[in-house]
Amino acid sequence: MRKGDDVSDDNTPEDDFQEMLRRLLGDAGGDAAGLEGIDLSQLGAAGIDPAMMQQMMGALQAAFRNESDEISWDSTRVGALHLANRDDRGIASGDRADLDQAFHLADLWLGEATEIPALAASARVITRGEWVEMSLPVWQELAEPVATSIADALTRAMREQAPDDMQQFVQNAGRMLRQVGGSLFAAQLGQVIGKLSLEVVSGGDVGIPVLPAGTAAILPQNFADLGEGLEIPADQLALYVAARELAHARLFAHARWLRLHVMSQVTDYARGLEVDTDSLEDLATRFDPSHPEELQEALSSGALLPQQSEAQTQALARLETMLALIEGWVDVVSSDATKRVPQLARIAEAIRRRRAVGGPAEDALKSLVGLQLRPRRLREAAAMWRSIGDAVGASARDALWDYPDLVPTAEDIDDPSALIARLEARARGDEAPRDTMDDEIAKLLADAAGEGSEGDQQPGGPTPV
Image (cartoon, rainbow, N blue to C red):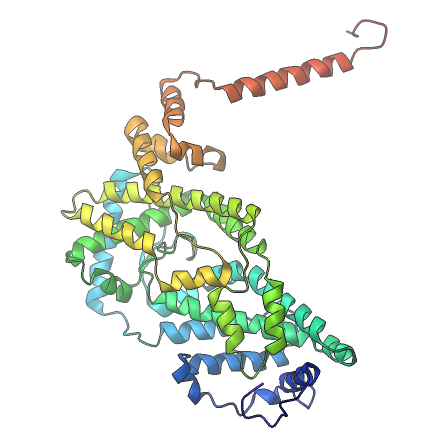
């Protein structure tokens, strides 16, 4: 309840819960009257953006009017664009020309470093707002399983906390309660995406393919921020960033299975998350819809997402391996393409450190959906790709992306010698060296074939011809 409300201090929890529901639904049957007239000007002192809270309150009011069970993501888009466009200075013609030139030259150099073909569409120079619009479908796909879990858990928790004489009332309000939880999550996601738009330099900067397939893009305003303090010429930095972005986009355009593979791993991981029902039930007993900042804080801190299960840990390890393979390949190819850049070593190391450390928005994304998109084994994966390329050439190296079953494994990252031996044997036209696993599989197949032949014999007689 709000401080200053005309409610006696000796109210029972049932009284508080009924009052909360009345304010949630409004005395007129769900017109959100209890959310009107709230003074948002005091939120600045608490570190909360009043404009963002106003949008969140609007999302809550829209939830009351929404007759569908689906979560509305309108507040995600509005909130993200609010932050992305707040300091949008547009794209200066000089910045656009410089980055276009960097893309053109990097594309030519990539042709010498990889067999994977160039993109069909030209690379783009985009604003932060355009990045939000282009990436929003992927963020929604990533967050929807978690949002649904939180919304459903909030509904269950409130029903369990309601007194017996309020059960029918809460049952009828179940859809609205679910919409409240979903709307708050969607609004929080909008803040995270908006903050990310202030940090990402290019389309592939996050690690997962957030832009449409075959799209390469750089955000000039964030690129300018990247160069501050590095004491590296802007044209050299632009060439390296452009090469990385084009290599990333080329890879996903060529290996068409890769995008679906990565996103399915991400969404499978997200669907496996379970909400901490004890924390949510405790929060539900105090939840005041006219003051949703407590739930907002719980969402942003990750307090509602418990520790990962063993299955979740294994799923995350598989995802991190794939992201490390992608980033490691991009590192090697972009470094080979930009070997003419005088300060290549300094630039590459600065980008790797930035990638390893991440930023506040990336931390917020981890808190919100429990996923940290930083490949821990990037250096090892890059070393593996380098060894493969040195041994069998760029063409055989890049052919490993043609099919999912050809892609190196975590064991290959640890020790690529067996993979290199197979690739070298294949290049010579020799039969690939057999290992113990091959022998065991062959033995099992032979035994199965023998059992099948015996089963075909007629009892008491020879096998029919």
